[in-house]
Amino acid sequence: MLPNLGVEFTSKLEGSYQPGEGEPRPVRLELTGRLGNLVQAIFAPRVELRGTLTLQGLAEGRQVQGELEVLPLRFATLRLGFDDEQGAACELEARQDFAVADALRGRSQLEGTIRRASEPLGKVRFELDLFSSLSQFWGSVRPTPPSR
Image 1 (cartoon, helix red, strand yellow):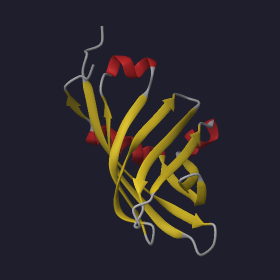
Image 2 (cartoon, rainbow, N blue to C red):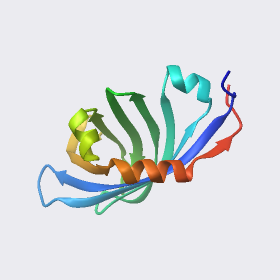
Image 3 (cartoon, rainbow, N blue to C red):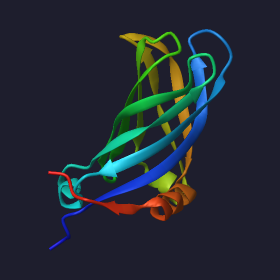
Image 4 (cartoon, rainbow, N blue to C red):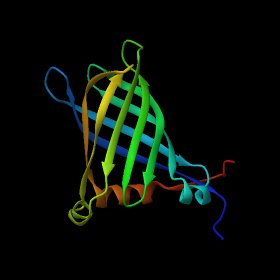
């Protein structure tokens, strides 16, 4: 039987944001993820996330909170909420679909949209180096007390 404990890890993502109008801008996420119970995570892999989003002109070092839903070998969906520089509620939602070719190349993308209320503001794309991401993930994992 697997131990009933949780884990935390950190992750950094960098990419680009393409507003509806204007030039592309760099975007950066620094996240801490928490799996409250490893046993439950095997059957319902949802990771609680918190951290900071840096996006010039929209969210300079703003706090984010949300989740990462993973269906192994199929997809991963990132959903984060944050307040923009004017205090309006925004959401970043991005998805990575699993492709064998991506795994073999060691590269993939997490692509999605940033919205204010229900209005799309622009597209976001994070380039993922799967090998260094996995190494970063395992290097940052630390045990935490289980959640119920």
